[in-house]
Amino acid sequence: MKNQLLLFYFCVLMTLSYSSLADESMQITPANKKSSGCNLSVHGFKSRESFFNFFSKFKADLAKKDKVSISKMILYPLSTKIDNKKVQVTSKKEFIEKFDLIFTKKVIRAVSKHQVKDFFCNYQGAMIGDGEVWIKQRKASIGIATVLN
Image (cartoon, rainbow, N blue to C red; front, side, top):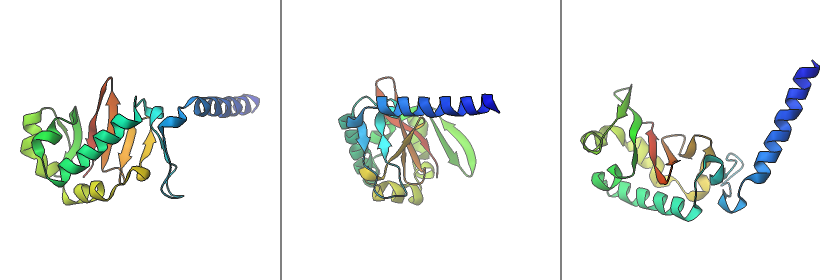
C-alpha cells in the first residue's frame, strides 16, 4: 500500500513538473469545456506558426480536393481504413489513387468545420474533429499521419 501511494505521488509530481515545462506560447485555448485545449509542445511541434500554416493550407486544399498538394502533406505510411480494413498507404501515387476512399464526406466535413480552438493534443499528435485526422511532427516535418474515416 505504501509503495502504491509513493508511486501515485511520484506520478503526480512528474505530471506537474512536466506541465510546468511545457511552452505556454504553444498553447491553444480550448473552444469549450469539452476540450482541454492543446499544448503543441507536448507532442513536439516546433513552431505554433508553422503548425497553423500547415492546418490552414490543408483545410484549403481539402476544400478544393487538391489530391496532389495533400499527397505532399502526408507522413508516409499513412494509417487509414478502406472498406473497413486497416490499411497503410505507402506512396503519393497510392494516396492519389485512393484519395476518395480515404477522404470520405465525413472526414471532409470534420476538417471543414474544425477551427484552431478545437484542437486536442496528446503524445500522438494534434487531433481534428473526433479523431478523423491526426497531425504529427516527425523530425522537421509536420504532416498527416492518420485518417480515420
